[in-house]
Image (tube, rainbow, N blue to C red; front, side, top):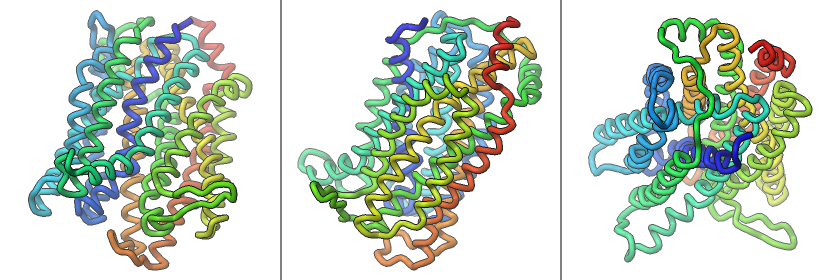
Length: 456
């Protein structure tokens, strides 16, 4: 049985990753279009094209870390080595150089590729640690749940504080060298980056690797066993879809509130009223994700991971469709919050199951082919996360451009509003249908996992 300190330490790692990832996914598109002053088309192209490098860097990092041997283990030392570059790259990404449009575009490509490369360098080994911290399938779900609970906690802090942090740097200019909105965004990212650096160091100090698999001597054999691993294909598709679902909705929210709901909108509950803004909407979702993570353990233990994933996906789709029909009124805003709460609970249930299932897929690889290739398998999870984010972010921007959205324009057309509503409702619902189909054919049931364990 793993120590509580290890579970907490493991959670701290994804708390750091998630703080950055949610800011990138939900605020980077609007930063590029409304602060950095790139066109929607340039931004969409940038976010999609740079993913070509990830098809190389993620599996390459997986193969490298699988073959790493240090006194700290295979995967854990990368938390120490990459924590500072991770923080610095994030700050550079949210910095705006004083140059023309072409210079800014080149800078955006370079810093975006740099950030995603460093993210791979620390996140692939971090995720792979789940396969070597315990050999018990249920305890992997426990570790994964701690991971996602802390991840959503970090996301809540980052998303809820982002706009107030930017405002803080603007309002207190005598204390901070802020001359523009872009400087304020950079200052806010410095605060987030420092926090993430300390969390990764904490993760390194508190965790240990307990399980040792045979080192894969032949890289091509590892790749061949990966390609023949049918459960890997299915769970990678499911991981891609979960990130598509979350990012399509999340990347739309900042635009949705700025151009559809309005900047100074309040919700009146009768006994209390409060400002209704993008950061609050997203942060409430993160808190409810944490509730879902807590529910994932008892639900998956009772129903199995596959059934729990299926049920959650169905509910995510049904509830998303309802979002399209909500009016821009006080009662509509209350319903938006209620839907966000319930949808986020179900996405919170799904998230730890994905990573726990990746650990089961690594066990299946060892069972079938005699090599776990743990980091190579988990690298596909990181790649699915980044591809899901990139495809969703690009698709949202292409959709907005096609529907005629004009950045920084007060009056948006009915078509532009319709595009934003679709991105919050029917499009995520269609993605959830794909998740259901994939889970129907996923073969690693509770019984199959038990059979694998008894054969070792």
